[in-house]
Length: 225
Ligand SMILES: N[C@@H](CCC(=O)N[C@@H](CS)C(=O)NCC(=O)O)C(=O)O
Image (tube, rainbow, N blue to C red; front, side, top):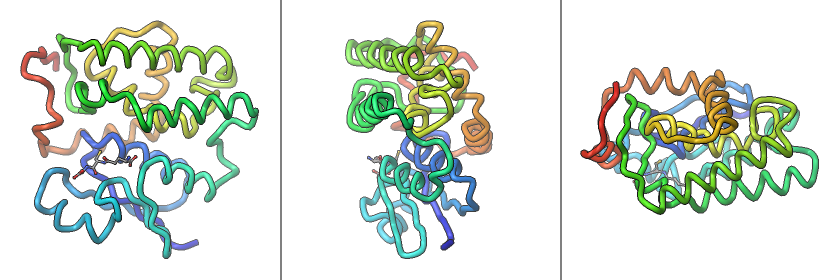
């Protein structure tokens, strides 16, 4: 097996990196990680040689370079098909694929107004209509997945898999900004936060000191801790 290397951004802020990193870590294979600090001259200097899209994450595996988080998830699923990635049942698979693609290409309100930031906890975030609509939609998707397909475990389709990787940074945002959700969604978010790989990422993030101003919380929010 050729060496696996994933290029990521700051663990505090880089939501797409978290998705790709969860995928490679979920394989259980040994991998190296290279962290390029976001929004720095170093990032600009090195990213071109490491990622064709000039974005993180990017996965290197022998001669293969895979960029874009969803592509990395699918590539990693090919590396270790014996692990759980997508539900086997076709109806569940269709739902998992749909909500994962929807996350990958949408939720612009949440992405623009509630950037992932694992440092500290906040309240008082004024939610725009776009954010409220995204929070409502994600609750519908999570509740439906848990009710219809999630009885085998604590995650969207039972065991931790591809859809959870895609939504882990959403759970992180809702926790960071203390956004109210229904009980089932809160339980799901807690399961994601307590997943060993997610927890490992949070622990690494807690050692970071760099600040990326564009991903910092709006000035009118109230810091809790
Ligand atoms: N669709 C891409 C998005 C990747 C992306 O936008 N990554 C951000 C960091 S979270 C990035 O590399 N930003 C650096 C830049 O654009 O200069 C994916 O799924 O991986």
